[in-house]
Image (cartoon, rainbow, N blue to C red; front, top):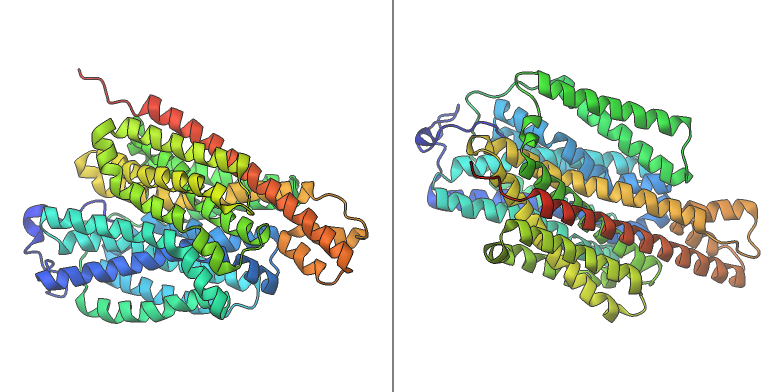
Length: 520
């Protein structure tokens, strides 16, 4: 995303390098919005579409616990790591060129993911999907700002653009359930190919080219430090969960990743044109709002992921039913996002954010205490509360990030806002998934009739235990499945309780630190 857009008086008449006017005719600019919003919808769907398909995918590819977590969240982590980088590069080479290249990358990676025959292939394809999504997301908001020169229209357009990604993430599990039930897990990615072909064909005709006349320097060293450091820390987390402990390799990787991230931060503070300007975080409200978004969206995406696994593996829901079971959560989330401005007008951003975080935390605590896959009615109210609270936080948190930054730095603030959503999604699944894996591996009880080698297999993951049960005598198989379901249920309860505690801390932080600055 651009840090410095062309000054307003020049926008309407500015010409691109190809001689096309930057401002599009009325019909064309809304078509441009449809194209970029459609692509953001796809990016959001891909964030969560695999959640419902995980059990069937696990039975076929047999990933390790760490491999499964990488498959799910390598997309969002890659996207978060490259958003600012792709925005800076798009400013230099042209946003139209960047976004069209992103469409192509996204489509090809989707096809590769659909036909993957191993966990490593699927992880690689999902990583490239994240690259394509970063290329798309980093350029689309800058394109909207160029195409929509009227302030009111631009505000509406950015609102629609923002909603598209959240709606995509929310309907992802349902779309995944529908497709998986009919055509199998690979088909969840083939949807992207069909849609991206249409978006690419229309986008190539209607999206105008634009560049930042004074682009920032593209600092390759900063890119390498941020991506490698983040990958090292997350890898260490996942390996710790898989091995239910730490060893020399895990500690070394974690320390190396942390050092690289520290060097990245130091470098950003020293260079004249940083990839990510950390001076924005000197503003207390900006930092607090960013942490609220990371914590909330991370907990929400993790909840979507673990709920789908819990319902299918413990409750034995088929994929479609699991997707449908999440619709109250999705609907309440949409209502929360829509009504957030009204709540903020009534109570103020500070107390609205605090209350919404507290509501989300309470809903998760209730779910941990009384949640039962056999009694969906008991889950309904916590699902509604969690969705509504998260919807308010996502909307008001993003608004607080933008309002806390100076107007001339809105581009940088928007880049951090987008990055915080994706980083939250990736870290939420990574951290909480590591906890669940560790609880499952250490908590699986002894099962009569199960040999040492078979027990080691069952401890790998619930999918491995279910696969093993198919080859055991009936009585032993039933005992193993019951033990695996009870252990996974305990892991889910633990993860939800931890997320609830984290949200309580975030709510207290919002109440204390989002107070308005003192008037001099």
